[in-house]
Amino acid sequence: MKTVFVVGAGPAGLFAAQKIAQAGHETIVFNRDIKPGGLAEYGIYPTKDKMKVGLRKQFAKVLSLPNLHYFGYVPVSSRSAVSVPELREWGPSAVVFSVGAQGTKKLGLPGEEARGVYAAKDFVYHYNLLPPFPSLDFSTGKRVAIIGMGNVMVDIARWLLLDAPVKTAEEVIVVGRRGPFEAKFDLKEFIYIEPFLDRAGFDDELQRIRPQLTAVGQDIGKLADETFPVLKKPAQDIGERRLRFRFLSSPQQIHAGARGRIERLTLVENVLFEREGNIGCKATEKTEDLDVDTMIFAIGDVADPALGLPYHRDAYVTNPDATDPKRAAYEIFDPQNGNVVDGMYAVGWARKASDGLVGIARHDGEVGAAHVLKYLETAPESGNVCIEQIRQRLECKGLRVIDKADLELLARAEEKMARAKGVAWFKFDNDEAMLQAIEAEKQAAIQTA
Ligand SMILES: Cc1cc2nc3c(=O)[nH]c(=O)nc-3n(C[C@H](O)[C@H](O)[C@H](O)COP(=O)(O)OP(=O)(O)OC[C@H]3O[C@@H](n4cnc5c(N)ncnc54)[C@H](O)[C@@H]3O)c2cc1C
Image 1 (cartoon, helix red, strand yellow):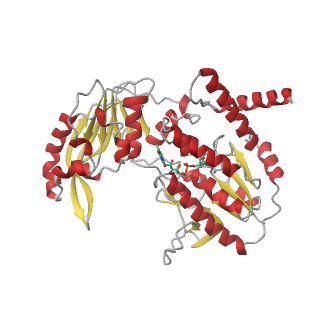
Image 2 (tube, helix red, strand yellow; image 1 turned 90 degrees about the vertical axis):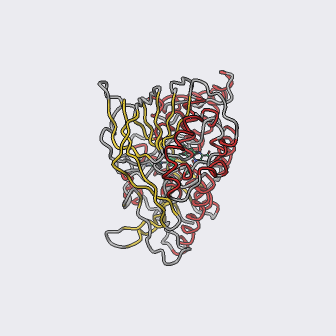
Image 3 (cartoon, rainbow, N blue to C red; image 1 turned 180 degrees about the vertical axis):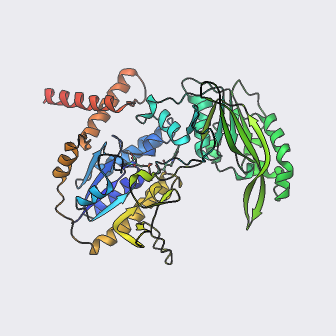
């Protein structure tokens, strides 16, 4: 038996941990957040209750394995109390990094620091109640530009137009650097926001870009069969909130008003080109300004450089030895000495940022775990890793370590709150409230015992 550390309890980390623990190894999961689940808990759209409840059940099953230990509320990073080198000093045979993609993709635009300009991940964390984001300013105005044409854009537009408790947005303008055929969202997701589509405005936009599409052999007549089936339906009256698209455009500059909040966005117009069957785009000299008071970048995320792993071009460096395709790059690689870092692995969105749905993250975690298990066959025995000693070390650093029993108490407290409020579910939106609820449940259990 060996000991393996898994850093990050999203789908990739938990399913990797499950495989490793089921193979009989002592497995310790460290997680930044109090609750496990990562984006399954704090990214997936709030009203997808059935999916979230199903995933929580699966995660609870993983956590019920007796040789799998949970240390929640313990961020590992060069900026926090526990660093990667320190973790390794504690003697595990292998460490799996499944921290997701916590970095923000920056375009480096002038004015990017203006108020009202957000990264999609942060905005999504805000409405999904991941502390501390609910208590930070994510105010929205009347005209919101969302940059990007994927599922995350759809979720955010859906929130703004349909489900936000206070709906400020009168117009959501989706800005895509390429054209309507390159939209990346799933049609079953787009259905939620299509009633808001300003059809007259959409037709005008298609006419504006028609010559560009024709130049790369794209036929607007086929759009309804490909990315915008809504065009087959009769146009309906839209209410006071509308969805618009601006294609072939990239943000170039953000202009802030007197109070430091974005009030205008300069877009540069792009032209399309075709290369080896793929449609690319390049900027022209032509620009246009949009009056917007909110802007959200939904262009994918990147790995967080502060974690402390070798980092290059927005990602952790994994084994570049791609000669054998079966040896997908799960091993962390040190480009300075040209060697794989012994016993260190990355899985899920930590390995490949913003790559697909939960099922893909799960699969990636499990494939990564298979590599780890192979490595463990010949790896040296773990140092003398004692679970209680690790807990004590963490507590000596002032960390309040959340364990599996705490998670059960927290779940119980949230169920009680939901019942008391007569709602389907309830989530505490700050760490302090979660910790107090755990303590209160603990005291109540002691008194009834
Ligand atoms: C807005 C949005 C909506 C989505 N909707 C869907 C959907 O409807 N259906 C679907 O199937 N998929 C959806 N996905 C995709 C899905 O959420 C991901 O595929 C999946 O969560 C990725 O799993 P992961 O474990 O790699 O990373 P994450 O889920 O990001 O998990 C990372 C974990 O690592 C922890 N962590 C981070 N940094 C540290 C650190 N320094 N130290 C310790 N722990 C750390 C975090 O606390 C977290 O628990 C959505 C994604 C987004 C962004």
